Length: 81
Length: 480
Image 1: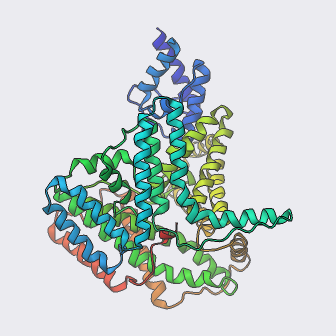
Image 2 (image 1 turned 30 degrees about the vertical axis):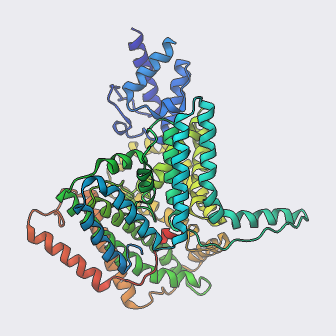
Image 3 (image 1 turned 60 degrees about the vertical axis):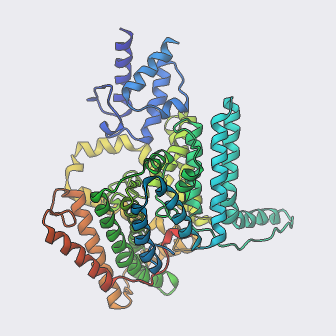
């Protein structure tokens, strides 16, 4: 249930930041899959995720984000803690 | 010795022959010796500097990894960054800072002159310094384990295809290849030679030919007409692209012949439809380095300021890019211009996307064409501040003259110069247009027909020999 809520919230964030209501997240999704997801909009998304989930990322964690699946698991681990 | 010198025509085949005759475990050492031989040929004493930065990078990266606390790791990284940047500062920025500090103190009535230095900038220092810094930062972030084999670190920083003008490579890409002892791969060797051939075409036929005209136009701006200056503005980015792009292809090709993959440095930049897209296609190795090691940390630290944090990070990143290019106000202004272009695009992204979507513009050929031309001209005018002109005032004078004196006779110089320039540009444009829009179109170099392939090579070599300019001076980016 918690995981579903996380994905729903993250989907809302992605759709708002990247201005694309058709985005449907999956674990393997990367910036290559969303046209407006680039280095300029990436940090806007990260900031929004931190605000919505009340968590804080480190730069090292940001650099190790390979896909949406890794982001979701990171959010889960920080939300649990 | 550089890629366009006669010595390289002897050096490279000999290196390749010995490289593939040697057992795998000796190839790395041989490449290291060959790379230092290549670099020493330029100026022996500067090889000592390269060796010095290699040793400090090697020592610091091992120390960073061994440090027991994060504070200790960070302190060592900061120290490494200072030590690595010191030679670059000394050779490239000392006089600029000295002059600036002197002027500032003088305005307060304080006279404190420090001696000026007149050492020639070691070729490649801006490039291998960034490579060394990137490696150390990657070790700090645990992206890569520190390399215990000094010869691998030394080869990474001195690798002769890239040491002079990039591409600015990453340890994460190069270390595994150097240690992996690549085998002879016929297809890769052929691809490598193809890239080198095309690189030589770009440099000798396009860049060096255009340089003749651009040099004359910008040498005496007072007497050049507005239309001639406009011609110079329009041609200069093509010259730079063919020069650095050509160099990059020769470097990438030479590495490929040895079985080593080096990153792409350009991706048909003049087909970009926005400045954001342009900077994803132009000097990719430098921009990706700046993105990973400057922009990302900055935008991370400023993220709570939302879009304004992005803007600040962009401006600072491109300010650093400008400073990297040169120690002069023109380069700083150039960097701030690029940062401004990208900031404006970032701030207006949603509005522009909504407008384009409303009228379905991005699918319309005329809109794509106009966008490419607009982007090109924006970059072309900004490029005035990145090399060809030595003062901001003079650059603005040129821009003002172009608009006030546009209807005027154009200086073409020797007819052969403009004819061969246009021919070279046309060939370059047609090939890149096909790659951009018809990637499945008729292949020349990769045609299945043996005769088509050989004819393509032969015709290109003949074109290079007939209309190439072989005494056209050094690669532009040797000055950076």
